[in-house]
Image 1 (cartoon, rainbow, N blue to C red):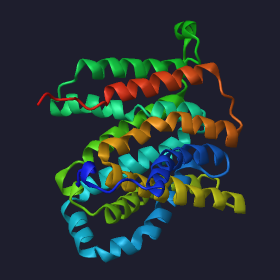
Image 2: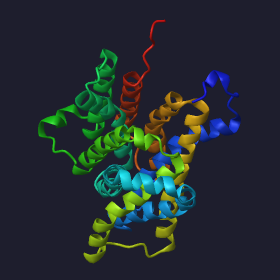
Image 3: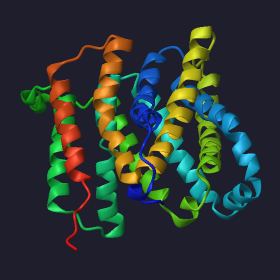
Length: 306
């Protein structure tokens, strides 16, 4: 990757796409919450990823030999990535959004980067720095405040909202998905064809639960509003989010691009208040500060002495 200091100065369009990335990522939970009760959750996720796969198909076809070789040689990795990144972080998230708010979901989901650190420690023997431990403690305290709605005394008689728990499971799944993406054979794939392959893999693993929903009377899209929301999920939460993030990595570098994750909590909560009519509570403000601050502390790059 070209060093940023040697690259051309970012243009206004580069900065616009940079700040649009967290907006598009956040739109998934907003659309998902907005579509709740209108389309069954796993059906929503299946239509999202089969639609994305169809749009990206020309890029997959252009690299068809490379893509076929990857699927044949790494079928298990391909399907596991689809299960974690599109199945658990797709249909399971939409199901959880029927039981919790978009505001809570985004703040809890943002902790996925912390689980990456924990999983690297558990699975790869990575050493955790004191700053990372402190950052994780701060961020998780922010999650606790959100879940408890700012009332610590409620912890004595607290029953965990299963929707919040579902989002937490999805955050762990996304962390595993992110680690698996670093597998050498996965990382060697061209980005757009890889995205198309993973979208198709996600559609495959989501097909059985989607068919089960249909067979048991699950809601299907039956109005222009339903199809518009699905189109929004495909266009913005999937394709546009991926493009903007990849553009940010290319122009600003991966570390700077990763900062977009920190912009998701305030972005998503503002969108939920404006678009969904959710109330902005004091504990949301405290949660934003703690989760975002903890994430920045835990994932800050280490300055090494020359």
